[in-house]
Image 1 (spheres, rainbow, N blue to C red):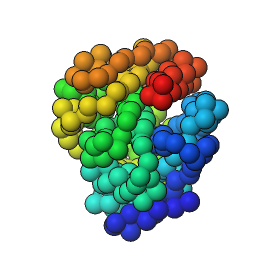
Image 2 (image 1 turned 45 degrees about the vertical axis):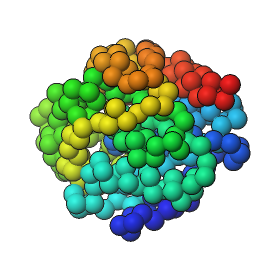
Image 3 (image 1 turned 180 degrees about the vertical axis):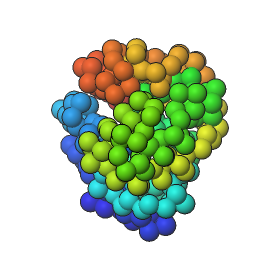
Length: 257
């Protein structure tokens, strides 16, 4: 299914499981898409088996959604608006639970503040102290300008930085539109996270070896009603730890108890 945003971009989304009750929204990170982020690591299946009504989406520039190449088509505030507009359309009168990973966690954090009392639970995965100390995007470990150049390179061999080359290889292997992903990275800017506005129960979950989610306890401590769960793995590997999906399922299920 597709939803057209207020600026004319088509966002691909899909609904899974039991349509009754609250909707659990899963938002992926940079270079990924809804299936790669949530279905392959079994998070989606675990939630469906637990009776959840799940909504997944491909962010603009990713997956089956439109992939404009202009930098002006992107930005954190635009990605947040896409999510809010989609939920206004398909879940206007339904309790919402927001789950995001990496860049998706930053998006759902901002969306939670905008959606207010419509959100009952929030899960922030693959993020840490950068949300608090670096206005959401941890540029200490995330070279956004370098990523934009790497994604637009004609060949990975042109990239000297092995970390940037790995990001490009990952995006290429996933079948991403590299010009669009480059524009996404180029448009991203740190924006102060609305931490004081988040009053819902929140789960912060990160891999023990995730360099993009360093010191996640700083984030959980900055939120009023947050708890922290650590699992094994790196930024790309933590989602595959069985404890990752189980922790999310347990946290979301408790809201119904």
